[in-house]
Image 1 (tube, rainbow, N blue to C red):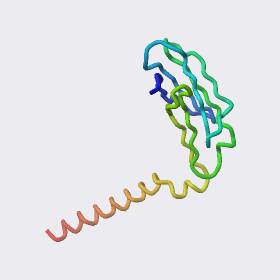
Image 2 (cartoon, rainbow, N blue to C red):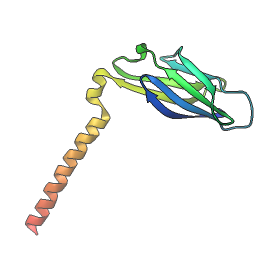
Image 3 (cartoon, rainbow, N blue to C red):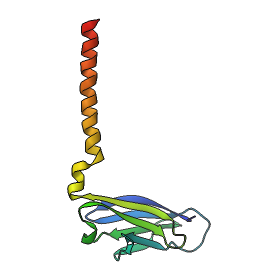
Image 4 (tube, rainbow, N blue to C red):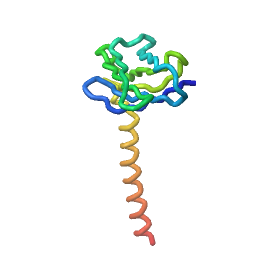
Length: 125
């Protein structure tokens, strides 16, 4: 189990930024590994944060990550191997079948059915 927790703070202009905090006792600073499709990413920076046991993690996502479909970048504790977080990206044609769009359509249809059912109840009462 990892002695660190990762919290996303922002994702702007292709740079993902998060805060790594120590959850265990004093010890070594975090050793972070960032991978996409099993390959390590290069532009990863970890610097000390403002408080004790805090570090700021910056990941500049390369253009190679931006491809059609769903892509996942894994952020792991290199010592324990535990995944601390992930960055999910959806690009291109995969958006046509996005579950959020489908849920929005289902909600609209459900609202339509509720109105029709209520109208039917009023008319038959």
